[in-house]
Image (cartoon, rainbow, N blue to C red; front, side, top):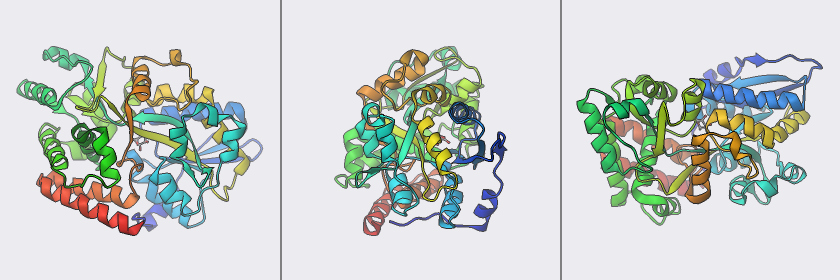
Length: 421
Ligand code: GAL
């Protein structure tokens, strides 16, 4: 398995520019690396910091963020630091391939299995999630929350004004009927902010799941369904049709600016993981009043997991502080403070549901009943090289709209990641 991220001089430069929060009372420090810089993300991260400060006061937190949704700008910076022997104490990572293939295999992480035992996490975190972070009996990260990747968000008032009703699930046909109606009323149906291409890849990922279903998803990633299967081509065509309804300035916007376009009624829908919720919450908009949501067309029976974890660096400069940080991340209090702001749900099954509003309760119910599938766009389902190849193929598709080229690129990428493993 190859890592494709370039170790550029720019990456080192960015790494040197981290903002610092808090005061160093006794000279104790903790460096936390993430890409949580949008309004909702930063507010939620701050809630984690506050919980940590309660547990371990007087530590200077170095908030090492690198802006760019989905972490596409942060990961190369992190990779440069890890390769250069200058790790942050802890960094944000998705479970599955990203954690195990990029960081654990390269020996950058210290196992935290003993913390799972001492904190009793093995009893309150679903085994399926722990397994995604475990290799040879050792567990390497603690999750703070689980996002649902396949959510279609909408501006309630815009839909009402245009006589569009969204039920508890939608089909692609229903989505396109609504999109036509909106378009003829002069409203841009779909907001996309793909200045980071991953956001458009996510629209494809959600549409692919809605077309092949959760069984098909598993088959694609275990090699039982080919990436040029007619259903994948059909998904590409449906995705292409959706792009016909997107905002013309999509490539100039970030994912959260696309959410803002929905908030402000410039666009009606956006398909985005539920970190979008964090933006609505930050803007003080109300669940089911100002904005609504439904699973992306065709995906109501499935839940794309996009989980966020934190690691313990091998050779962490501030190991004790980092262990305390990880304990905070896995605690009930921190998860109940962080997730309402972030849009994700706690990984702990003992979290108090009454502390969460309608959106979160919807997501928690789905997490318990839908089929859980990993995300390729967020590094869980496939090696980094395949994730990168998908982004490249989507960059091309946005321009040429050629379903055959897209599926051929994916066939090739799947072959290459098999031989590279
Ligand atoms: C994902 C991450 C989320 C959210 C999103 C947009 O990769 O898991 O927490 O931050 O990117 O930046």
